[in-house]
Image (cartoon, rainbow, N blue to C red; front, side):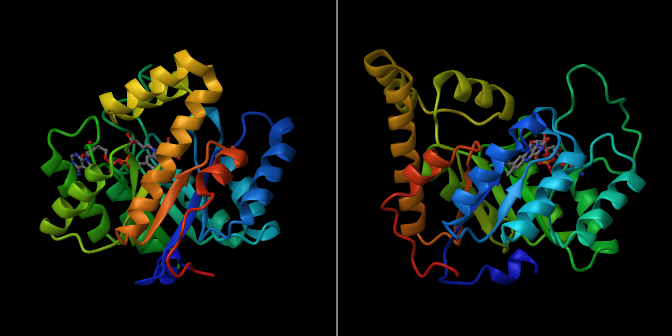
Length: 295
Ligand code: FAD
C-alpha cells in the first residue's frame, strides 16, 4: 500500500523514524523498541539508510522484518549519491519482493573525505533523479522526499531549494517530510512559501526530541538546521541545574508542545525522529491529542 493513500484530509497521524543499530547484537533490543512503539499505531515506520555507518543490507532486512513481523507499514530511506543505477534498482526490487512499497528518496550527504568522486559517477545526481527512476520503473512504490524549512545547507537560497523540492514532487513523489526544526513558525512559513511556489502535495513536519546537549549540537552541525537561542538557553540552564536528565525533560516537553501545536494547526500528521528511544517517544506523546487518528 502506498502511504499517500492513507493520508486523508481531517485524519491526522503520527509516524516514526528509526535507524538500524550499529551492531547486530543490538537488534533484539531494537526490535523490542519497535514492538513497544508499534502500540502507538503509527501510520508508518521509516528506517534510515547509510547514515551512521549502517549498510543497505541492514536497512533491507530491518524494513522487511518491521513490515512482515510487526505489521507496520514501512518506508525505507534510500540515498543515491555515489550509487550505480543497477544497485539502486536491485535494492528497490528487493524491497518490493519483501512487501515494502514505500521509499523516502534521498540524495544523501556528500562525504567530506572525498570518497565520492566529482563529477558523480552516476546519472543519479540528485534526489529528483532518483524519484524519476523509481516512478518510471516501480509504479506501485510510494515515494516521499525531504524538505528543508531553513533550506538545505548547500542550497543557494530558500527559493532555489524550494524549486528543487517542487521538482522532486513534480517528478512523482507523493509527499515531503521536513528536516527537524524547533519553532513551528519555521514550518508554517515553509509551507506558505511552498504553496505560493505551486507545491500542493502534503508536507509532513519532522520533530526531534532533544535528549542531550552534546547530541543535539552534533546533529545541528551536520544537518544545517538551527537551534533557537531561547531554546538553547533553556537547555543549558537545565543542564546546569539538573544534568542530562533535566535536559531530556526540557527537550521532550518542547517537542510535545511542538507536536500538539502542529496537530491543533491541522497538519496532516507528524513524523517523529525516535532516536530508537521508546521511553522518550512514549513520554513525548503522553497526553497529546490527535484529531480523528487514522487506524
Ligand atoms: P536533493 O533534494 O537532491 O538536494 C541536495 C542539494 O542540491 C540541495 O541543496 C538542493 O537545493 C540542490 N539541488 C537539488 N536538485 C538540484 C538540481 N537539479 N540542480 C542543482 N541543485 C539541485 N541521509 C542519509 O544518508 N540517510 C537517511 O536515511 C536520511 N534520511 C533523511 C530523512 C529526512 C526526513 C531528511 C530531511 C533528511 C535525511 N537525510 C538522510 C539527509 C539527506 O540525505 C541530506 O540532507 C542530503 O544532503 C540531501 O538529500 P536530499 O534528498 O534532500 O537532496
